[in-house]
Length: 192
Image (cartoon, rainbow, N blue to C red; front, side, top):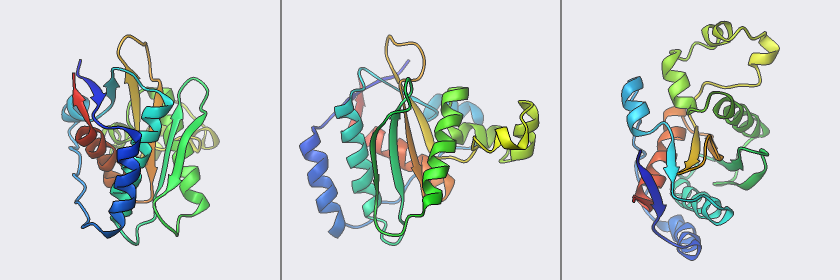
């Protein structure tokens, strides 16, 4: 199991966020669509610890990265798995809609129920919401509580069973919603 630890401090991400306004956009890597590659590479991340400080850091680093993409307002949300308490949430710029909040909630629900990223679910079911609904015997109303669109990733902690937090992004294309989370974690946390 690959375990990550944080590279920087919260002060660093706050500066990064302010500096991002004038920086050149960094392309977001598109995640693989092969299920084995996703599971191996970018389905979830296990950290040595994940505290509210880590959530703050990750959220600000995501904001700094997404602020570079002018004209693409995005909602960033990090919540705890045991209570669904939101420990970080912000938008990358003006123009998000209440619908982004709904997407984040639906993505979070999927991660918490199935324990994997929404990108994995999207690729597994080929984006077919109806096949997904039928597979789990859900009514249309029940299925509306979940989303199989990329952009929510489970966070685990070494030695703790299950998901401890969910990082979700909404506002880009779903591969980018997922990819930016993966990019920011890999760029700012290192393998132990």
